[in-house]
Amino acid sequence: MKKVIFTLIIAAGIYACGSSNTETTEQKPISNATEEPLKEEAPAVAKKDGKALIEASDCRTCHKDDTKLIGPAYKDVAKKYPSNPDNIKMLAEKIMKGGQGNWGEIPMAAHPNVSMEDASAMVEYILTIK
Image (cartoon, rainbow, N blue to C red; front, side, top):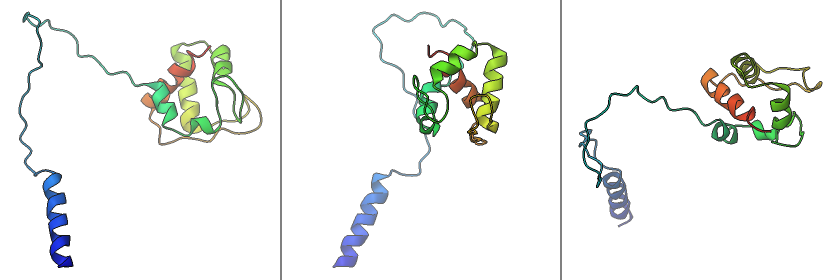
């Protein structure tokens, strides 16, 4: 009896996960607006959310927005570095490679698994904290 119940549970789980059918159906959005001819626009590039990336990482172990913890407060970083492409690139590289000496003797650990795009988004967010 246990084998039958176990088999039924497995079968129900497989059924609930769906089939391997990869066909998709096109769905049109529901709208009350009248249809207008589509304007050709440049494709929008989704900008990464630097704050969300920081919250999903280990950054908060050493940094807070307005208080020095192990590393500097983000507002102090924003005061020291104006938001410009050179500073964003330099600070993003520091996130990826680590560093020591700019804010004291405790080194910042390297984060080699963070992409340049993600690190730049994080820096852009940090430099908005005033």
